[in-house]
Structure formats: structure tokens, C-alpha cells
Image 1: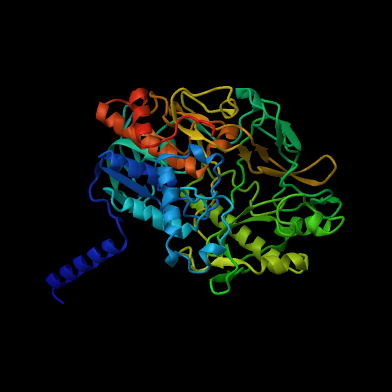
Image 2: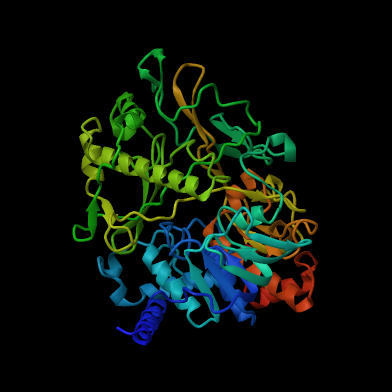
Length: 570
């Protein structure tokens, strides 16, 4: 074959690959707005940027946009649906439209699906398959002028190029460099924010630092909010009484079982660098034609599940009476999705949360994070195999769990597991306004609202330890609900101007650990993503720093685009 033909065939192959992978290649290297992170917030920000006439690039470090919304979290945690507006509500309305098509009900009749989170005649649908969310996002992106690149990661060491306080370009690991007037960090980890030199924290602040009650170590069974209402803390998602923590029961010299911290939990209310636990929000099915049975992972270590065995064995009576809440047999929340699928989440003392094994994740290198993700996956795969097939698990439980498995038609992996780990919390920016428990409970009200938070104050467990009686306990759970929606400050999504004047951070918002536990919901991230893009576009139009955007103009634009900035009881 001569050189001319070789070049011709190479070009044909290149064009075909480009067309098959969507907008995988950036059409240019300079944009009005560059968004790093194709999470739900990133997708929303990209759509809004396009609608405001800006050239926009969306960079997704993996091969799949949507973050957790397309990665397993189909049972949307919302709180009050009235305050979800704009592109976020549009997405859930489109989900409802998607399921109005009979062709999208392959494994179940539509009328057989019980929509626990939906009211009659509601304009939106709040539970969905991850694959449905992915299709809806792509349909929403299709009419917009958005360039998208996949599988490109920020060079976190030297990839942020600044002139003074402005980012002028960001460089990827593969050497690709992108310039923009404004940048948005929509990652769950806050990698662009951190690399840009913006101040941040992670872990738990002390209660004293901001006058809170539900931050720091929370080892007590119950605690009180600032309004003196009850917070259910260690009483939930914990072990039953008298579960022994030692490798040889009753023998401390034998050492602790895996994943139990040495020493006690720490001082109640004190700060630490513990991170609330991560897991995979599994998409399971009981449909025989679509089910992949649970498999024992390579390197399975039975000792890692000894606490699970002992928790069942410590039951005084029927295992159905071990806990007063949740599934009577299985330590999970198996929320029903369309097409006989689930969004399966953590519940009780030993479940899908890999407690205490994510502390290094926020600051870890990409390679180290990949190891943490795979370790979480192998733990959870081992857990599901154990619950389904191990002889030390009660037969009732095995029979119930073995009916389920991962789905053949949801994710790219052959084993049916997603790649998106549920990163509940990582870095949090520290800016000129910090959202705290006082905002959540209505004592402080942000006057520059760019969206509303609508969920209670919530944290998953952070650590596992031995109590004063010599038994194992979990610590870190917080469940404080019953508060009205509250405004999120514009200043909480922009850094201090002397640190970076053209960056917006709609996910790793400036907030304390316990306030972030209320804000960190996918519908709200979409709201904040849209608001971030609106502000970035207005800053470009006004040729000003992102911190100097006129709030009156920003508010007017948000309201005209159907964002909700105050709660009106109905």
C-alpha cells in the first residue's frame, strides 16, 4: 500500500472513531467557559453556558457523564421538591417523559411499578435507572453548542496556569491545554479548585469552631440540634449489643478485627480528618434474564466479614427483630427503580459503606484513588457474595439476597458494577462565606441566594471503634431532619478574590461538614451548576471578576430561568 492510501485510510478511521465517540475531541483550545467534571453539576453548567450564548468545553475525566446520577443514585434524595427548579427540574421532567414511552419498559410493565417518591399528577419523576439518566442527559446536551472531551484528567501538579489571580489555561495529563475566560470545577473532589491554590479543608470541624452541635465526633446515640430537636446519631446504622471486636472473641491480645480503629472514637464534638463513608450505589435486579449473580471477588478474605457474622449471631431472638427499622433481614436499603431494578444503599451496622477506608481519598494521587476505588469495590463484592452464599449467614438472608444480582444492561463493565464510587464528601472550599448548621436551621440566612438546599443534616458513619465495654461501635452517623429549605449563598461557590478571580465551585462548596451533609444532593448540585454558569457568563459580559458579578442582575437571570431562590409553603 502506498503512502497516499495509508494516509487516506488513517483519516477515514480517525473520522469514524470521532463520530462513534460523540464530541470526544475538543474542536478548539480556547473557550469562554471551561467546565472540569461532567457530574450532574457539570452537565447543568454546560447546558446553561450554551443557552447564554457562550462557547463552552465540558471535560469529563472518565468515559461517562452524569456522575452519581448516571452512576447508581437513582433514588433521588431531595427533601422539598418545590425548591428544585431550572435545569435540574427540567431533567426530572424529562425523566418522566422518558418513562412515558412504552418502549422504555423492557423488564416490567409501567403500571406495575410503584413510584414511592412521586405524587399523582406530578410534573416530574424522581426515581430512574442510571441508563435512563444518561440517555436524558445526552438528549439535553444534543441541541446545545457544547464541546465535550472524555478520559482527560487535569495535571494536578503543574496543570493550572495563572496570571495573578486569574486562571488562563488548564493542562491535562496528556498535554492538552485549554484556555478560557471562566472556569468551573464541577468535580466531587475539587481537584481544579485545589490545584488553583484556593483554600479548602476536609474532614470534620469541631463544634466550637462555628458554634455548631452536630459537627466533629458524634459518638452519642442521640444529639440535639441548635433548635433542641432530636438528631438520631449512633443509635442508627450501628451494631446490636455485645458484638466482640477481637480476632479471638474476648481476647484483646489477639488483635482487632479488620477496619476497627485503635483507641476510642475521640472527644465528642472535636475535629478530625475522618471522612463519611463511601460505597457503590448498586443497581441490582431480580429479573432472571437480566441478572448477573454475585461472585466471590479475587482475594476474598472471610475475616473482613467476621463482624457481619457476629452481628447476626449476637441476636437474642429472631433476626427479623434485630432492628426496628428497614429491611427485616438484609442490611441494605433496596429502593425500587423502574424495570425491576434497584438503587441499593447502606443500612444498619455492617453494610455497603466501607467505613474508615476513605480518609486518604481527597488528597490522594490518581493512582492511589484508583486503588481506593477498587478496594471499595472488592469489599462490596465480597459483602454481597457473603450475604448471598456464605453458610454462616442465616438461610433466610441468603435466600433473600441470592435472588438479586447486578444488571447486564446498565454499565460498561462485564460484571455489572459501575465505575462511579459514591464520593459523599471530599474537599470543601473555604471562601468568604461558609455555610454552617446555622444556615440549615434558619438562624443565618444568606441574602445572595443562588439556589435552595432542601434536605436534612445528614452524615454516614466515619469510623469503627471499641467502646468502654469492649464491644464494637460505629461513629459518625447524623440524622437531623424537619427543617425548612434554606438559601445557599453565592459567596459559598466562589473563592476569595485574592485567591482566584475566575473560578466557580458548585460542588465542593464553602461549608462545614454538617452543612455540606444537607447541601450535597444531586438535584441541588444541578441547581448550583446552572447558577455557577449563569454567574460565569455574566462575569464575561461585564468583564469583571467572578466575585464582582452584580447580584441583582444574577438574581434576575436566575429567576427568569426558573430557578427557585426562596421557599414559599404550599
